[in-house]
Image 1 (cartoon, rainbow, N blue to C red):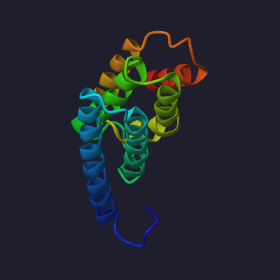
Image 2: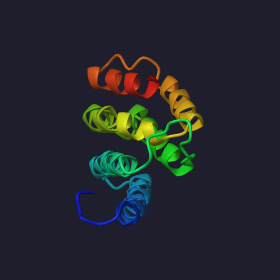
Image 3: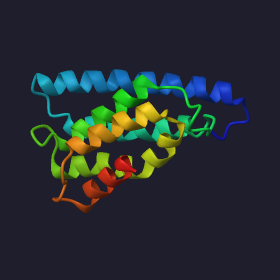
Image 4: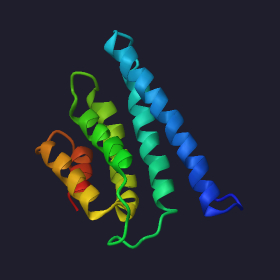
Length: 146
C-alpha cells in the first residue's frame, strides 16, 4: 500500500493477494470438510483477508453515496460472520480472531461499500444474535451494525 506506484497498480496487486487468499480459504474449507484439523489456519486466512480488503478499501473513493457495489466483498465479509458463529468448526479463540479482524477492519471497508452492501452486511450481523459469550464478538457485531 505504501509503494510509490499508482493507486490502480496497488489495487491490482491487492486483488491478486485476495484471489490467492480466496484459494487458500477454499482449500482449507475442503480440508476441514474431509477431516483435516486446519481450523486455526482457516480462521487466520479469513482474518487476513479482511486486513487486505481494508487496505484495498482505503484506496477506493470515499463518497459513500456513489460507492460501487462489491458483491465479492460482501460475500467475503458474510463468510467471516458465518465463521464467527460456527462453533462446530471454530473454537472460541478462533472466532475471537475473526471478530477482532472485523472490529479493526470493517470501519475502513464500510466506507467503500455501497448502501446496499452495507445493508446486506447489517442483515448478516443481525443473524449473529447476541454474542454474549465474548466482548470481542459483541464489538464485532456492533461494528457491523453501524
